Image (tube, rainbow, N blue to C red):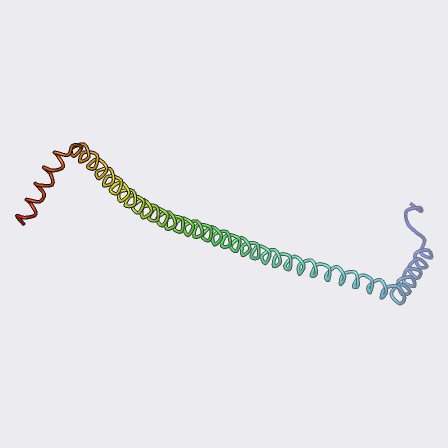
Length: 164
């Protein structure tokens, strides 16, 4: 049992050394250790605050980015819509102009055909009249080939003139 129970002198000196060590640690080491712990705690707090702040900024930036993307998509859709409308308007204008041009060409062709037709009819009439005169001349020459027929026709015409 001697080994289990320490000696009173040893216990006394152990207590004094412990108190002295505690006093020295409290006097010289306790403040720097507490300062280091407090500084570390403050750095960790600041890092956590910075992380929370950064996370909030990231959420705000993501929301802003989503808004910008949404606006860009809307603008793109608007530009595409305007481009389609412009293309459709250009197509409609081209169709209208081509119809007007086609009608103008058809009307010009119709007028040209009518004038050509009138000219052809006039030429045919002239040609028919010329042919009729030539045929009549040939018939009259055939009829008046002899002198007797010429005298009879001259007398008949003279009689017709005297009656008038």
